[in-house]
Length: 271
Image 1 (cartoon, rainbow, N blue to C red):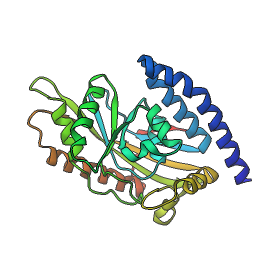
Image 2 (cartoon, one colour; image 1 turned 90 degrees about the horizontal axis):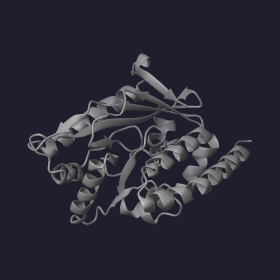
Image 3 (cartoon, rainbow, N blue to C red; image 1 turned 180 degrees about the vertical axis):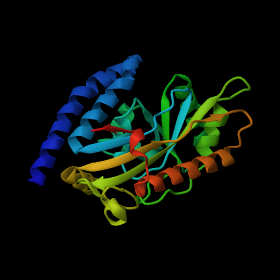
């Protein structure tokens, strides 16, 4: 039965994808504002079909320009975040060459960075700064890789600092960085625990196709998104201290979520 369900989900996702690719491609070519909306529609459809329940604690900041710095557990993070608001992502350059997912990332208007070339950071910073100045909320997975879902890895300060400098923030102009915690907490309504979190987490040398099939086949996932307090970036902001503070906030929020200590009265649920 689970296999039949997974096949039906993939078929439905294929139909939705084929329906949305042409208008999104046209919107991107012509620069229409609706290009921010089509990915949101796709992720909403995908989250419902897969069986995600997204619990939001707090909300994304309304201030702009905005950079969101989040921890990273799985490819599923993109769907989880993408179904909440119009967002664009910063991803490693290898993603652009992945079958299917590379196309999705490009249609999501992802900014790609080659982490093997230090000189590429400046180019990416300028592109991210331009997009932020245009009103796009950009998401940076600040660990630089995905974790096992039970911990938050050290944040990398290079791109956070590069965006800070590229924005050329002055005394009367401020950009914002908002920490965000992603925590997968329940599977089929039951607390997931450290052992079962590997069902969702995609890291190391895990095969993408097999992991994707397993997640779609099982479904029934609860994920908690905890939005931290937006931090203004000013000209004198120290990037290393800022990155360390963001990391500590995300780690603290993630621990609270994994331990089930988040206040229910502040929760917004998106099925």
